[in-house]
Length: 173
Ligand SMILES: [Zn+2]
Image 1 (cartoon, rainbow, N blue to C red):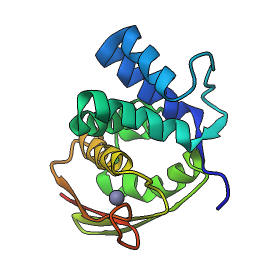
Image 2: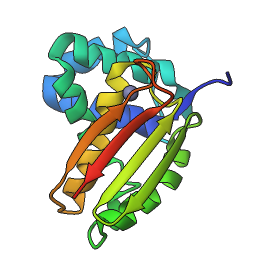
Image 3: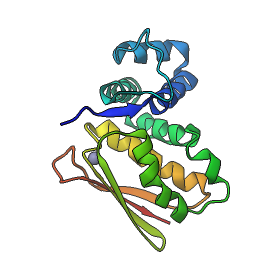
């Protein structure tokens, strides 16, 4: 497998959530846990996804899985990559853009979103390594509903971490 790399701005937004929620001490602990104590993560560079996994695991181990989902939601709302377009955009348009946004942020895995009227099926192959990743993605999809002021639900129906061929999420609105 080629090296799994993730863009720094995703890591920085998760660290931002940690700092906002648990303060400087929380951020320091999470940085320690993920081996980036003295490393300045640049928004535009790419880093090992191992850092991201450890940060997510720090959140779940210390504060529970629900917080991981919240972190995914916060990150999506503050990434900037989506922010410029969200004000006038529908869920449909946002999901259409999501695949290309994903490629700008993740140098691994594959995301495929089938969109029909009021429903989308998001398939993610080789994206999630641990359950925390999946929870994060639920938060990301919920954030898209909130950003577009759409009432709806996100349900995970398949999970590669627990043995399925890929992770699958159904978004209905
Ligand atoms: Zn999964």
